[in-house]
Image (cartoon, rainbow, N blue to C red):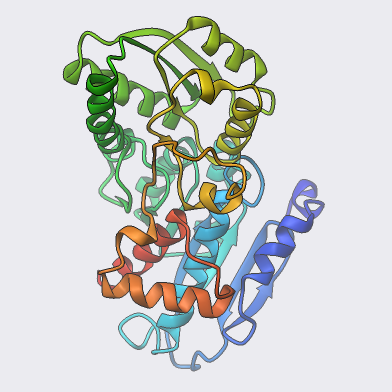
Length: 350
C-alpha cells in the first residue's frame, strides 16, 4: 500500500463507516480509502459474489456519492439476508475512494480487480472517472454498472459491452430540459442565453446536448457566451459577473456536485437569479435536502431520479421504507441513492 494511501484519513472516511451496519457485514480491512465488507452470516460452503464499489468521499462528487454508498450497502445487505444472489451467493463488497479524479479511479479499478478479484464494478462519480476505468473494464471483461456518470460517450463513442448505464445519459437529460425551456422561451419571449459548465466530460457533453437540442427546437434563440470553470472551483464571482454583464434572458448551467451547491449559493448572494432566469439546472434531492433553507423558491430545475416521481413502483416503496428505517424518519433517498439501489437490483436480475 502506498504511503499516500496510508495517510489519507479524515472525518469523511468515518462517515462511510457509519453508514455500514456492523450486524450485517464484517469489516475485513479499514485502511483509509480501502474497505472490504464480508457478509457476516455467509456459510463456509457458499461461494461469495465479489462486488467492487468505486465512489468518492473526497472531491466535488462526495456529496452525491454518499447516497450511492448507503444504497449499495443497504441493497446488498437485504439480498444477503435472503442468501445472496440466486439465494446462494452472498455478496462481498470492496470499496475504494476515487477522490473524484480519473487517474485515481483508474488506479483503484486495477487494484480492486487484481487484488480483490471483483466480478462487477459499481461506479463511479464523474463521467471522466467512468471513462477512465472503461478500458480496464473492457480488457479484464468485468461488468461495470454506471449509476451516476451519464455522459452519452460512455455508452456510445466509448462503448463496451461490459458497461451498463443505470441513469439517463446526458443527451437524454439535455433533450428533456430543452422541451421545458423551449416552452418558457415562447411564453416569455426570450431571445438570448449564456451557458456555464464544469470543464470536464460531463459538463461539456451536457452543455453541447442542450445547445444542439435548443438550436433544433428554438433556432432563433441566440447563445451569447459560454463560460467554463475547473472541477472543484470555489470562487464564482467572476463567472457570475460575466453572466450578468452579457445581459441574457436566461442562463443554463451544466453543474453538479459540490460545485453546484457553491455556485447556487454565490449566485444567489450576488443577485443573479433576480436579474437572469436560470431554468434547467440540476436540482436533485441532494440540493433540496442540503439547501432546503437557501435554495431559491420558484426555480425550475432538473432532478435525475427523484424518489417522489416513482412512488407507484413497488421497488421504490420498499427502498424508501428500508432507507427511512435505517437512516431516520426524515431521511429520504437521493437521486444518486435510488440509481445505485436500482443498479444492484438490476444485477440481481441478470
